[in-house]
Image 1: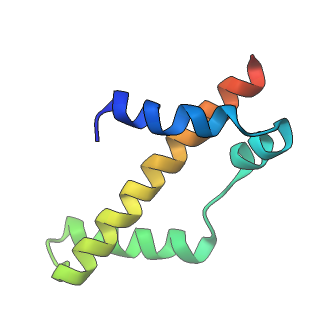
Image 2 (image 1 turned 45 degrees about the vertical axis):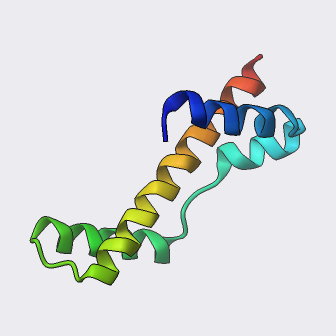
Length: 81
């Protein structure tokens, strides 16, 4: 997905959220269990040992983490404005 497409998707969402929701997004942290799974899959990926199912799971987790990071940045910018 291009940056412009992602902005077009997330800007209306971010602008519809109140300050409380924006602060909750900024404060969001991945659970220790999910982080442990990401770390495990990353290690296996680095060693070239991911199964096809693990590869799909790892890619989905990375994509979700990237989306969350962008949304957190947008929330921070809206709060600062």
